[in-house]
Image (cartoon, rainbow, N blue to C red; front, side):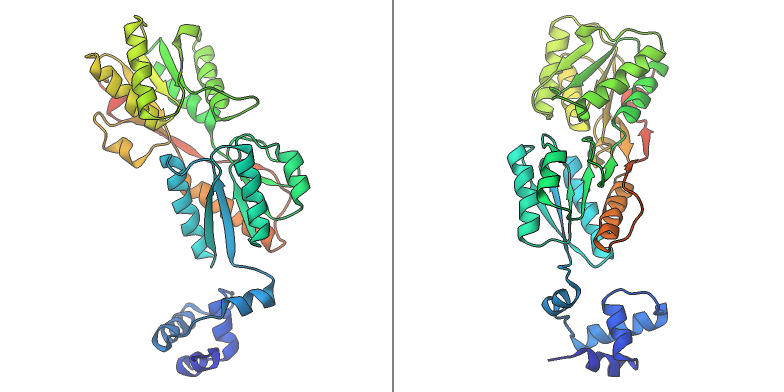
Length: 334
């Protein structure tokens, strides 16, 4: 069995230097670090993770609990969280809560039972104040819209800010009757209610009214629901000149539904979405979308959590991810 001492002899350094490289500690030059890594690769050395965990009291694993994995946004977020965690020597276990309270409680309990070093949680219906107090003071960072209790960090999406900006863009492109295609909002400040607020703010600033008939409520946030909403709007004679869908996935369905009725985008109406999925660039027409910085979100969430794991970091608080509005073909041409 190859030991750390064998690696040290092969690299021409001390065992302590090998330990520092293996555990990603500072104080080792890039040249020496690379030499040690080559020696590790050549020797076939494998770290005894169990022994390291017993010494350090850490598992080297963090959890990520999200409502759904079949929504492209959460799949992309999970990929980026995994990448950033790997840079810090951590692995990520991803849990799907199903957007249910019992699923979110189970994710917290599982993270404790399996002794994860910390948990990134994107809650939907959970009473965070009560459940986190009950769960105890384990490192946890809240993702998404739900406010975090005192003492916990919160990384939020620019829901209202991004929606206000993209609605303003639609108005600048000449729209005056902007339909909002949204899901059924729950109680409190969830993603849907925050995006609705941003929509209303943009209309209010332009001196326009958010007419009730322009609020198109759908069930699941999927393409089929977006398509059905477009059919319903056109068949009822709704005179919208633009559609903002609360996700890109819904916007794809809206564009399909408009095409079914012979309505052209952007020649006849404008369409915009939120999330800036990779598919948005390649859809026909390509989709204008709010683009929250997912890399920024994942990096800050992981680094905030690991700082808490190490007992570091300043006062807890809420930070909002930066965003851009990426304009593409679906709002150009007028």
